[in-house]
Image 1 (tube, rainbow, N blue to C red):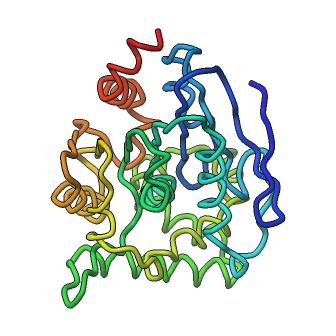
Image 2 (cartoon, rainbow, N blue to C red):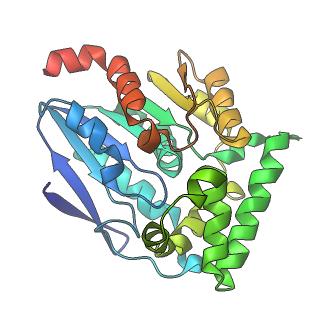
Length: 277
């Protein structure tokens, strides 16, 4: 598939630009690239225009080398630039870290968003609202701090273990072959920066409640408590949102349960799919 390039804060961000017509912008999770969305992309007619970046440090975009230089604004501005490229409001879809980027872009560029689909977005800051901290917040914050500490100390494998056991699951991670582990190690400093946003993101539940476009929320029934609580809280405040649970899925449902994710997304987009077909 042909890739194009954006310039964002001095970094080259690669992105897929496929098809013509109703635009759809896709934001992938940590340690991935636009290819996370291939099952969805291949299921849609080419009369959709798909815009799917490789975030900084992933795929064909510029490399990332130091956890201390992490700047979420690079990935956020990449999504905003893609939305601004669209001649009409786009369907915006994000998973995990990409979901947190997507919801923030929808909050600030609501006029450029037709609909919003979030698969377990990692906007964990909503677990510490005002004077109340949900019990799920402490565990995920501690993991983020431990991962960042290990990575900065050069303990790359240990830091990666912390992250992958939490989000992928201990059994799945144990069964991951060594070649895949080494590829993931190459991105672990960027992942540590992304995970550290547990403590530093500022947008509140009320900020997200002000998003007034159709919202679809997706979670795996076997995901960790913190991402499930985030999805439940968003569903409680986002007007007209719909929450779908995928049985037996964990946090990585776009990879492990791709067919079910595609079915839910296509169902939420049914009027547009029919128009575009």
